[in-house]
Amino acid sequence: MLNSTDEKRAESDDQDKFGPGQTARHDEKYPFITEFSEFISTVSMDALKYTLMTHPQRIMAQAFWEAHNYGGSKDKCIKHLKEIYGPQWHKLTRLEDHMDDPRQYYEYVLILDHQRQWDERKKFAKLRQTKDSQ
Image 1 (cartoon, rainbow, N blue to C red):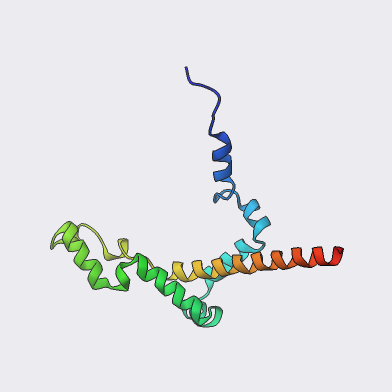
Image 2 (image 1 turned 120 degrees about the horizontal axis):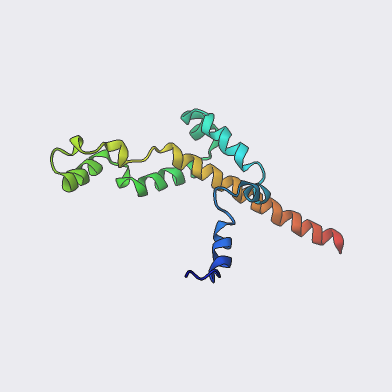
């Protein structure tokens, strides 16, 4: 018979706290995150990179993409695929399955910055609130 008590229930509850199904909790911590994510998913890549992002943000997004995608080199990826699958690798897999679209990394950096800005705003609001209450 199975034990009905789950000793790790509290731990799993903590892990679920910021799971994808817990959007209400995300919105409490970072207001408008859903709307912001939807918005940036609809703009063109040029607008995303050159209108919405700063230069350091573009560099960070590019670095993330390169770090996860063979340094950004299709040739390195193909060489790796040949090592794994042999010279006829293209019959077994596609290059797109092994190299991510850079767009997701650019969106990720913008979302991280959105969250950072809200964190700073909340910190400022708390400081202001304690200052006003004195």
